[in-house]
Image 1 (cartoon, rainbow, N blue to C red):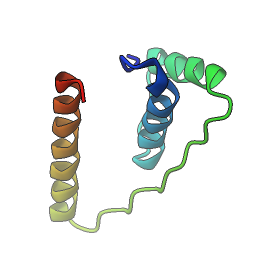
Image 2: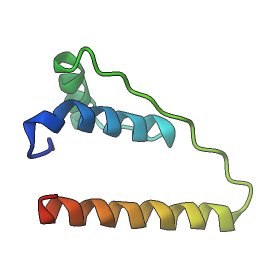
Image 3: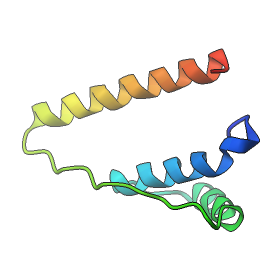
Image 4: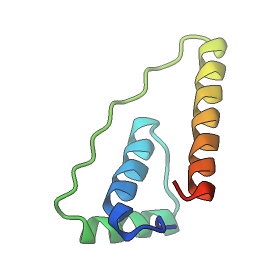
Length: 83
């Protein structure tokens, strides 16, 4: 799903790709196709990411999950508020 603001299209695609790479996430065929479509349009966009550190304990994994969940909720609020 593309962002509502056309000007954010390439940044959105780069962020989406960076998140997949950072966390070593897989992409199904639909997501892969969508990311490739973004790449065709956004040829000057650079995807920057840092691999996530490996967790040494379940507590670290849970803390990271909470941070990610919290940031996703903030992002949804921004989208719903139009900010």
